[in-house]
Figure: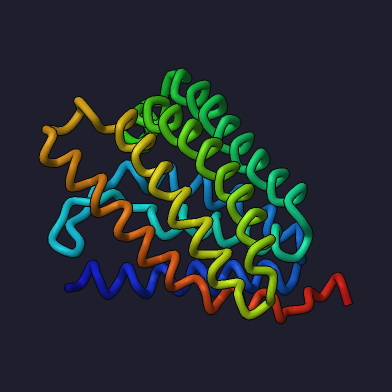
Length: 227
């Protein structure tokens, strides 16, 4: 149960850090969170773990937190700002890919101890990144539009949980299918791929439910730079 408890604690830490970024830096803090989380989640996803009895990739809760960030932006600043955050996350991931591919081409010094590790991690990144970028752009834009559509039907502040969970759970299903299909299908046997697909979506489902209270806290927060 260690991974399960650690995963729960990690998800809560992600949401708390997101709120801190929003409190101190306002809208810019949410943009920064989306950029950082997108990059870090795509590094963490190279590690597989055993959780809830299934094989899963790391980085799910960190990546899922970007959907909370765009939901907050959509809720408080409008769809245009949420879409801007989506493109910022995409651009950050693309820059990481380009920069690290150049970095790995340099011939290491005899004293170097990190080159092999960098190749192990970032050598996988291009395939994972293509999968992630396609999944990210598709699902995040879908989430933004679904959130806005649901808000027309459920516009009350108290109904934020419907907008948040409805948009995230639908878009995350598409995100998970696109990402795991491109990144892992054919790399792992079908049964392992299926476990990764199911466990990834289940974890994102759980994180989506967990992030709802933090969304309400964000709605009540007044960032320091906006007072």
